[in-house]
Image 1 (spheres, helix red, strand yellow):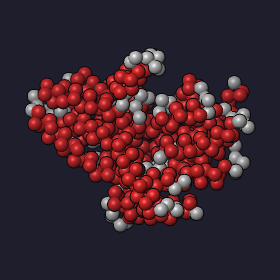
Image 2 (image 1 turned 90 degrees about the vertical axis):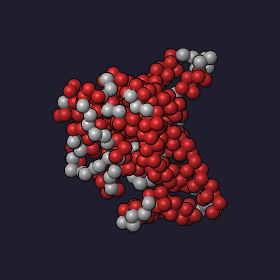
Image 3 (image 1 turned 60 degrees about the vertical axis):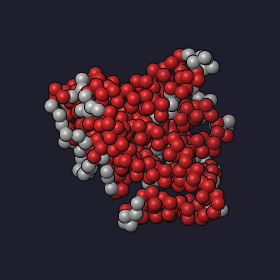
Image 4 (image 1 turned 180 degrees about the vertical axis):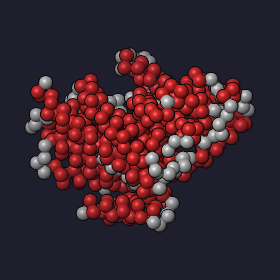
Length: 440
């Protein structure tokens, strides 16, 4: 019954936003409240879950989304994005742009969480799209596939890190095996699959569109790269120091503060205000107008992300995740396949990769005591399952849809299928490693 209610809620959400043309945030509320009541929550519990989901989700992403939009718009308007795109094209050429984007995604996603990396790379993607008139999905999907894979598979991202601890796996081995699985998954889901999507018409957010400037008016290449990628550089340094220094040392509180994505983004915006604003001859009033426009551009996106968070929280509060997991736990499937399936079903129903991974881990934990399954591979199997078929109940789905300005149908064709390819190829890679490792 739980699965049926969730399925009906998802179908209703798709119907309201596509055929009914209902605002996505309003559609989330119209679906979330009846779904919570149908799942057995009292009216007061439903409202509390909606408020908690909105608050928790927006609290975790609002700073990063708004500050990332400010930085991205300034990078575009200052000409820094144009300069970055020109350097990339001169270095690698238009024919290799997909592989360039995929490699960039791999590098920057190791220290960055998915939403942060997404927002930081959007100006780079769109600068290439606008300047060289290439299809947006064709250019952007390889980079975003790399971001997604590392978010689901590899430490230090939240769910994989937690799974390593829960299963007493080895971080180094998990990371190494994860890279072996991640590379073919990203190649297939990114550059290769994106080539089939060149016909998708996408007009990305106007915030990142800017008229090409004469080369002598552009910021320098070093200034452009450093200003645009400063959050990546700062986080890389901070995380490196955290890894090198004792966990309880005197610098630990300061490093934890500096590692917060909101703090990093605020620092980066302040630096860019001068490096790409004042130092390029722009007045403070003009820079603040750019920031105000960026904030207006992402206001509706924040509400949609909050709506997805409300639906997720109602499903979690109702106990839907454990109920679904318990229903599959007695199937007798091999542990790696069962872990993937559990995480995949919870992901499809609840929308959160992190919740899916941790819930599946809780069910699979007792299995480890009575099985010879490799705990490092179980981390990866669950991580792969947690990426399966992102759709309308996932905030990442709406980030991609709204920024690339796609229809729900085209978002399902591109984003959702890409995530599914990543998940399935990840599972196949894990099963292949499970077969090969004892024979090495």
